[in-house]
Picture (cartoon, rainbow, N blue to C red):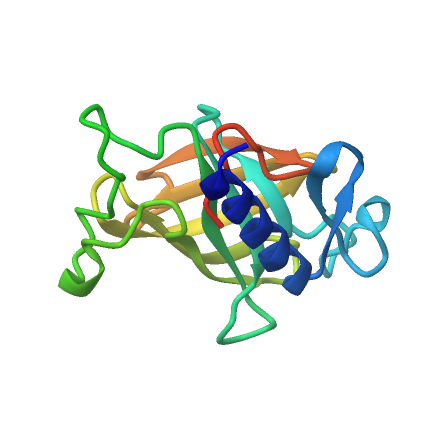
Amino acid sequence: MSDLARWTAALTLAVLWLAGTSVAAGNKPVLTTPEGLAALEQSLDGTPAPRGVWLTEKKKAAVWIAPCKESGDRLCGQLVWMEKLYDDKGRLRLDWFNPDESKKREPMCGVRVLKSLEQNDTGVWKGEVYNPKDGKTYSGIVRVKGQDQLHLRAYLGFEFLGKSETWTRLEYVPQDPLPCI
């Protein structure tokens, strides 16, 4: 293992430890709640909350959903793993389409893609969805289906004018290639 890989792995474990995670067998970081993964936090209606790591529908990225730094009662999600960290020319993929000029040179991995998700009384989480592919922010709805499926709907104006994806819960952040958190 190279020095860079060791440093990245150590940094990843430190970040996960600071965020309240544990390391399971096989050196795979496992995100847990204080009660453990088996007792996932419940939404107001008794369904599981969307906290944790989710693999996107096309399996090209993983998003970590956790309380927002600015507001602990709302949830945010950031990219923590991408299948392709680098473009075809070997350059780190950046958030080129971000409308904020100061963020255009930031790495794509680590970008916050779910913002200010707030739960309503029916277990639905509403907030914003940032699409780094076009730099636009959409209204979003998140619903957890069972213990390991998340339904995400991003739309402009009306919910029927949108796109849906189904994400799958992961027990750990993928390690190949290395995670970017």
